[in-house]
Image (cartoon, rainbow over all chains, first blue to last red; front, side, top):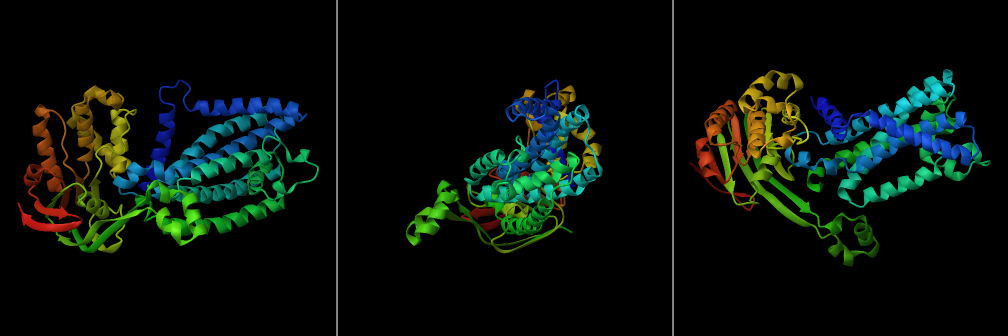
Length: 247
Length: 237
């Protein structure tokens, strides 16, 4: 029954956002398409890169980066936004976080249409490695889940955290190879090798572009999940009785 | 058999000023040691419920009365499991239905029908359950074709009728109701009174928090006066 609840909320959020709009949730797809198209055109010129190489790379990067940032950023406000429910309706508090997570998965699914369009237009580069998207995406999602939950709990108690996180992610967006390729840097600098977000992105980006993610990315991604998930559960257990008082 | 057993229940919470919630203050207080720390954590501890013991048995109707802030709503929220006790214990047998905020779950942009589902889910009903009850709910509201329209186009009376009809469709063992329930214009009152009676009598235990003594008397409730988080007196109306 409670599973029904967060799914209903998430689907309602999307429906609500596009009520009375002719294109409806198709706007999600269209917005992503315009963004990828515009950025792709500008940066392929700027970095003198081949559009057929660059556009699929950019599309995957932006789509998954979008999922990552929105889960973490909206995770920050998940409990605060659910205040009305948390104070008045007996239901598990985690529902409000699942709602945010599910809503962003729905949005991500709409955005993935752009990936398939791009890959169809610019020669599909599937190989046996493409199957690695399954474990890759799983590790990616697990990490997202705990990061968003931790951000949500801390933000409910300390109201500066959302601002801190938004700014951090903004900076990370520029130093992570998303709209520029790691190949343009001859020596792999520390801020790529040590960038956990780069490794998380590689786990999904490489398979979708037909190659295997680097071993280091697997190690980083799995280690973070193994440490982060128990940590977030521990934090949630400690905090959940107090969240109704904090919101 | 529904039963509620409350033993030495205390609920206290910290009300944070904007200061204590800021990370900067928190960090500063650690960095500078005791002196600022006493200022930085400008939270005030409120003892909302203070050593409450109460047994509520099958068939009982309890009306919590008392001034604003005396702890009525806090007790209901604690019974509903929203607030966790900071002292003492609560044991509850039976399913709980809580009407604490008459509008939670409702969305003005959504249609009447959609709102029946949204509010129904929030009240703890499953989709199947709402499917079977929606006919009765829709009929009771007498809103007819209006149910297809967004709720924001409704008048206040129509809106409260809809909320009332959905809220009273649940059938839990234990009912927790904050402030009265009721809706609509004079012509509608008869129906509301009848439905409320039916609704309340279907529950094995009902706990109300209300200032409306007439309503509590209509419901045949025992009065339980609250004062500063304690039970002040205990007499049957």
